[in-house]
Image (cartoon, rainbow over all chains, first blue to last red):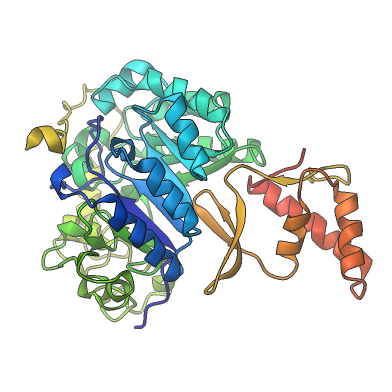
Length: 365
Length: 93
């Protein structure tokens, strides 16, 4: 299958982060500071991305604010005609620095919240960040930049969903993204403590549907459901190597955040190959592009052009076979694996298991 | 239920801007999204400066496209702006 051009570039510019979220989506083995790409390499990459037809740049991490050259990177991206989105915890973003990022051409800032209440929010993040985030959100309101409040939901905070939506309204978010935890990276380690019950999930869907209708035209509400309760899998990354390319802090190009869990894939580095070659030719990108790799039930399924067989990493993590149908699909022969995980999760009475916090890659070295 | 009226003065919200690429043509870039602009979409959005109201925008477009049925332009502009407003990318002032 030939590749059509990518539309989005996810730039993980650092894995350093002041937070220790129990559901961190970064890979288990993170890149250390000394491996991070220099400013000029990122700038050149943004120019190549634009030439390849990429329209949007997502600056993420780790915590992208940990890079002192962030405003430079944003200015370069804007100069290359890319739409720039900053995905951040907000920790360390002063009024002056925020103004500098917006002046450099930042289009959109996505600020993560862990809860509506301070104590549980700080517990999830493993640090005292909640109050700072609220303060920052009020500063963002005063800047001409799109503001998304990003809420990660799970068993422990889902019952406060109406309160969390009210917080987004109070903070005048342009967009609210409510995302159930996905079980990759660190989140998989804490799955038993994070996975909601079926009734919690169903209730959350009702609340979100009502909020979306009520807030139409004022605040866009986007929602990512919990994979394990889905009937069909999500179209992970919009399909493997179909529209998105991710570059990690050391310059490795991946089709998604979690692709490192798939054995046998080698990720070419943008310091050795140009971006177009990687997109079109790199074996990791070609591996699951299109439909040739699919087995049944995907191969003859009408939904294969909508969900592309679901998530390759999830198939690897749950069924130990990256080329299998995503086991969250109710049509998968291995769906029993998922049922066995969700069946014991009933109403939440018992005290949850303790958290396993992740350690910052710098202090781990 | 329509919220865009003849007096509305539409303007793109912060973080929503027009762009183009060789591959996609004219696009509206929005937070976590790309809307491809076909037909008169780009022309309509270029009129959304927060100064002109919808009646004035329609009148201006009718004079730019004299060969097109004026009633059709009016309907298209209303439908298009309403759709973008619902998506949260347009302030209607």
